[in-house]
Image 1 (cartoon, helix red, strand yellow):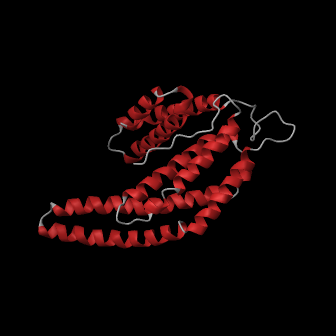
Image 2 (cartoon, one colour):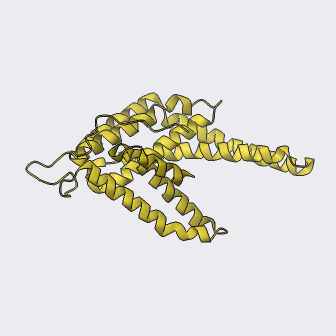
Image 3 (cartoon, rainbow, N blue to C red):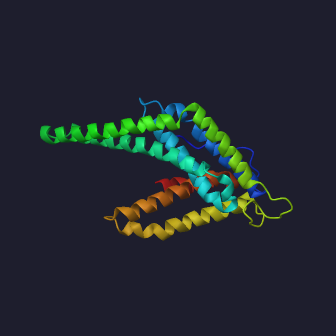
Length: 240
């Protein structure tokens, strides 16, 4: 899995919206850089890396939403979600096919033949998913989305003339204070969902807790520069 980029040009004690603009645009660019690898069908990890980058971007958008003018984001959020969904379709089939092939390799002839049929069915779904992903990742289309995204973030974080609040009407706060709030919120979400650990036969609670833990890990990785490398230790523990 590709490591997140270190984001430069952020003043942690300055106005939060200035840093949020830099972070979101950097995360979007980071996702776009994975395009060529994602379209290399010979290595399924390319799709995985771009999907993870899209999750980091969407996680940051979710975290920062209270500090943005939502109406200024227009339809770019929907387009980012559509792209993430297209990556998810291909990745899900990559994982399923690999697992089924491993299962079939160790099965008796009869069951192995059935598994092979399921693999073919999954490959057909992946084939369509790859076509959809190729359309979503056309160079021109992706450039237009990137241009629109940057413009939307600029508008969503712009200060209102004569106002002492940030873009969403919150009292002006520093990026470090926003980071602290977000980490605490993500931690509280994990704690709230932790009862899923005591229901091991129920998939949904465990899945919800896993997603919540990922959001906490992404937040810890994102805000690590605010306090130093000690946050990465917590991020690694959450990942484990």
